[in-house]
Image: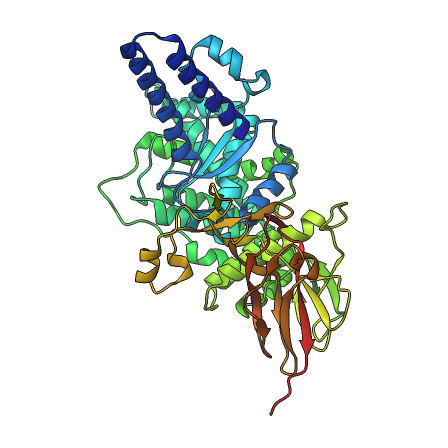
Length: 558
């Protein structure tokens, strides 16, 4: 994708240079450059609208979840671009980016600057309305319903043509019984759209079980301006929830899921002057009769096994209790009276989150669920891989190392010196640039604004949030500050304290932690680290690498 934009910018720069050199008349030059600037503005507007918006970022947990579903469903060759787009509800659209960027340029320019292998690429742009929509609770909407739209663009929905024939036959029989003409022109397209929407809803339920139903139902209730009104492309939110609820009640895999799905049970609407049209009723009744069949067709369509909540419910209960205690989980979790371990999946965590949200759990368990999915992705990324960050990860046992608990519990070299790894989310000072004298300057510093806000780090205009995928580098320039956290969640017992220092191998490059990070007894959480590059060269850090050492000691009370 970046190569495509780079080719586009090279073409624009070449046109501008040619106009300034080859045209003799100043008026011609001005007119040509204005046209080129207009074209550049067209490309920039597309980039700003669909590639990025403000400083909002998509959590890595969602990126990894999308990648997992992508791999499991054996998706097509067209790339997927997950973006934060316009501030509206989530949308899924297939864009021919090559045509959008190069379509208004001359053919000879396209041949010169657009590589042939990029001409037929049509990246699938999944535009998410805001960073809030990327939370763990909404994964079934994004990595379920919306992703199903992409899969449908690559492979047809099962039995769609059969449904069209059956619908024609149904309408013919009804018309004969009512002694009327079987006119239903235009309904075919509406039926296809409605079937597609319900099928994508069912895909979310197939992948996430009860959490898929709850997320879709909550999303429809919160985003619909009229709960009972249907449109030409979408059935009403009420009808969609009603169909999904009926399917869920017929599935044995939804046994014991009442806490999650019960609050969304649809209620019969009161009498209204805005009753559905007869043909709309016919379409929704047709879909309702085939919804369970559509659900079961997903198995072969995606080669995916449906999430079985009844088999995983006890594990989900344990995960939910851990989240309620603000303790994250990792992939291998000790569980059961035999003190055996089980493998926790991302779908277990999503269902545990909804179980807690629909139950009596208080507090923001969404952040703990986000952290848990980060651990799952970390272990999945490097487990068994030939990668410099790959490490053995064992299930956590409490009371190990004098009661200190690390999650995830990576292999340690010592019982009194524990290695901490770099997390994947940061607050970073904007990259500095060197001036003519070689000094590193911050071009965006606004000290007046900083003074007005009491010096708070978040108030600095040159401090930006950013993330890295596991193993990806982040550069820290000389004099630059990076506020990071440890990968590991730490739980300290009452009789142990600790002190955190940067690893000596990084200190020799000039990387220091300017504040002494002391970990007190009873501490629970991630360790926050202020990292400053005091050397003369940039330092590259990788998300997940060993970053610091936690030295353990027994406190001496005076």
